[in-house]
Length: 257
Image (cartoon, rainbow, N blue to C red; front, side, top):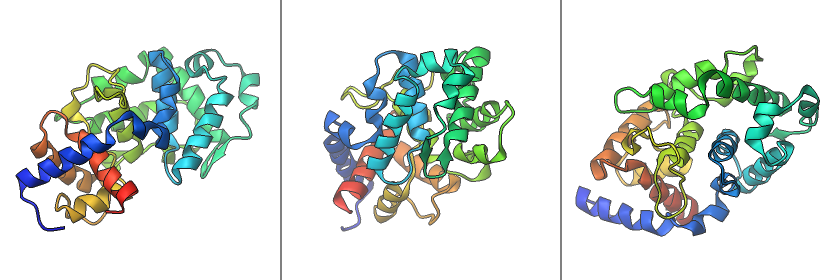
């Protein structure tokens, strides 16, 4: 593909965004799990837990996310708030790669703590944005999420941008919650975080495509690469830069760009 100037690049990515930002995208993506629910708290809890296991084969992710929701009686918010220790015993069979039943039990207990002590997931993220970014919010959230006694191994399942991570899964979760999507894919149920504070869920697909398009020079998919890519995408769309995640991911995952 020949080198594109900024105007041509925007036109190309806008076209790909329109191609992939449709409800046809949902059945191929883990975002289908929160789309099973209608209440705000069920949506955000199912979205958070699904995002946490969103690495590896997407079919396996989706199947395991469905199993996880079944373990929560398909009523994630009610289960989080009202579970008993006996209820948690039924979770001992769950595993997704390195995320196992012990991790899930802690996440359930911590989510209950988050809803009781902080009013839920949304308030922590929306109250801790700085520098027109959600990256500090992710850092603060991780600290609060692990306030309860926990195994050290659990902490690896939530990334920290201040330790160099691109925090792909949490950024994806935030895109789902914050981005107002008139095409019925992203939910936009969190109203207190501006869309242009969001960061792209940087992964192998989006990173490789971004490099081929000249949007990203850094070779590692880390926090520095994320800042570089965010800066470029905000030039293309200052209001809704993460919409281009659809274009970058679609080009990589479906077109082998």
